[in-house]
Amino acid sequence: MAETLVKICGLQDVEVLKSMLHLPLDYIGFVFAPSRRRVTLERASELIAELPQWKTSEKPKAAGVFVNPELNELSELLSVVSLDVIQLHGQESPAFCQKVRQAFPQVQVWKALSVADKERDDADNKYTLEQYAGFVDAVLLDTYDPQQSGGSGRMFAWERLPDYQEIALRNGLPLFVAGGLHPNNVGELLDTYAPYGVDVSSGVESEGVKDIIKMTAFVERVKQS
Image (cartoon, rainbow, N blue to C red; front, side, top):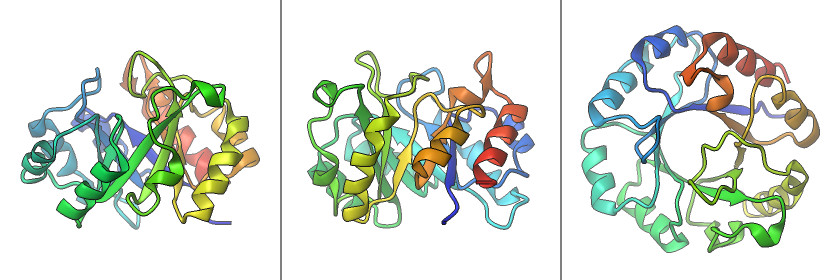
């Protein structure tokens, strides 16, 4: 079985990032959309500059999280900050995702989809996972929240995962799972559904700050599977 990939999202503090240099991470996410975890271009540059110091065999890739950005906004940001992934967390269409891929061929494009407890309640997904096939490099599932585009810290109904996984596999799309994950429940997700990758933010925080003990426990649990 292939090793599950790990992304820790919402990094803001350089000293916290330095404490993580030993962790075998695959991706680190930096939020450029409105959020309490939002980073400025200057801070993002400082954080990303630390990635070459990583102590594991491969340094993690940098993912930028955006909600309904304009192409010129992405262009201006990428002229300052080096990203490996553009993660689109709003209502971006497949056509827009294709434009992003064409404009920035050196960067992967991921599309986040919101999952509610019932299929008919996936209200903010104008397009289905299958419609993004061929236009994005990966899909990330997060919990539907009518008030915000992800980052709620709540789980969605995991029993809905197999349907998404079947479609993703059929279309050759890596599928990441986010939403309410933490060190004590990620093992159940891995053992039951074996996702391609997992994405965590609030589940490895204490009082809103990334906690190295929780991050270490989370990564160790994923990588031992």
